[in-house]
Amino acid sequence: MSEKIAKFVDDLANGNNADAGEAFKDALRAKVADGLDQQRVDIAGKIFSDTGEAQPFSDPKPVVTDPAPETETVMDTQGNEVQFTDNGNEQPKPEAEVPNVESQPTT
Image 1: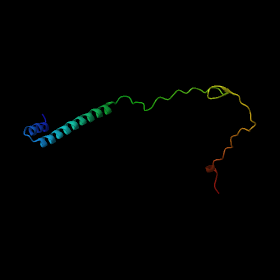
Image 2: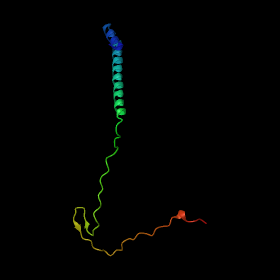
Image 3: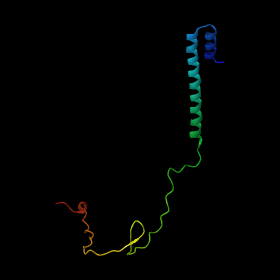
Image 4: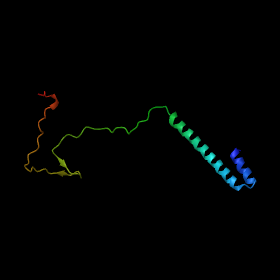
């Protein structure tokens, strides 16, 4: 029996209820602290003992297939074909490349 529990029993037997209460609290604190320390040791042992193969940190990359060949068919979000009618607007054209300013000599 630990000395804290022995003190609690002795104080209780002698009628020192206030001292017995404090001895009980001390014994309980010591028991909880010992339990927490043991849990810390167990968890630390489990965390640092796994020296096996490294675990992947993310899900594997999905397999990407080639896109379907381009078609002239336009589909809506429901999978139905949409008829395309030309509205006469000119389609945009890519702009000409802008020369790299850093490569030009300064005067």
